Length: 165
Image (cartoon, rainbow, N blue to C red; front, side):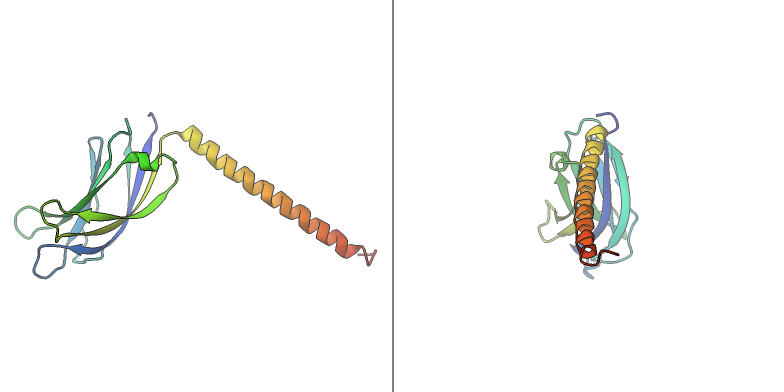
């Protein structure tokens, strides 16, 4: 899969629940796939954070899921896992952009979690991707030609009764 790239835009999260008494979290996200790992910026206390961060990964096999983990920065000790989800790459094989909400679950504490919005785009075949774009453009051009022909016919009909326009 030479040239295969997965682009993830971490948009936002909602209803993040932590074990803190205040209920507020200082969240960040770790994405990992095929031995690669990347982390978002840490957000000031918010249960509904917005990141809008773009992270890209070079995909070698395409067999592993992307793992998304949301953590709460700890004042003392280790950061706490709020929740996680896994997304199989097979669900992205159409090479379209997928903008979706995913539920975050905490395997050790069901009271924690929330949901996260991620835009995922996996281009595993640049040739097929470009061929698909060209097909879409060809269809749009054909529709425009048909509309132009219809407008020209309407204009011709408008000129007939007057003869001099």
